[in-house]
Length: 324
Image (tube, rainbow, N blue to C red):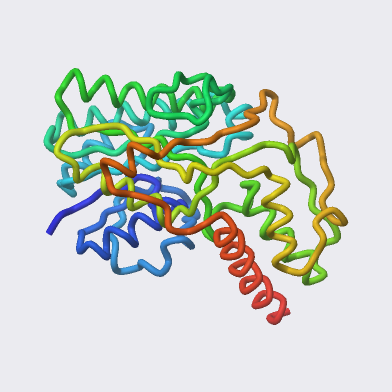
């Protein structure tokens, strides 16, 4: 039985990846930081199916112990301070988790078992002020947030350890990927939740930032398969994972409100406080390499994704409203 260790297993991607690996008959371990309150709602359905290991990306020795105790064949590093706006208010913490945490994991692999295959969650936010459109594996990075800067470090330290120590270490440059498990602080989930709340009479308006921002949005459940495929190749390579389509925040809002029978223009208000200090106006990935080498392609369309998220929030909030 193959074994995998996932950091960030309680997050959106971690929970979908755990689902996927269990379907492939893996023994799945997940690293969770010790805290007085554990947020495990995304993996509640996996209770008894995955093994939780306590460790911390800021603590080198805890990571070494976690790798020694689990002896995984594959490690997926999905943990990070990943909410971009917070990276300005907690820039140092973002750097420690999102950048240096990658180095600590690579060091753990190097000291425990250099045959472990390693996946690093890179991000389209590394492109930032884009130098070409669409973005490929060869497009130069120009990050526009502390989060993006930290991800660039994590990306290149993975490349460096691959080339310095002959590790099977890869980075997946994933463009925006969403789902009903996305955190409520992210704009897509904020929109799906907000549209439903207004439809149910629980809210009167939805405040958003830059409606003209364009993103390449896919479904997280599709993207975790690409992570796994990268670690099944004969040689380590980095890949852009994207849909190859771009949509504005405005289009996302329009589709979400339309699905609940409302005109978004009547309820969405632009609030400058939600603008970033340095905007990323457009991100559009070219997944040609992933399609050719990994034989991967997204299955869920943009409109299907929006409807999926709205339907999930509708079911959740109707149930919550009925209990009152």
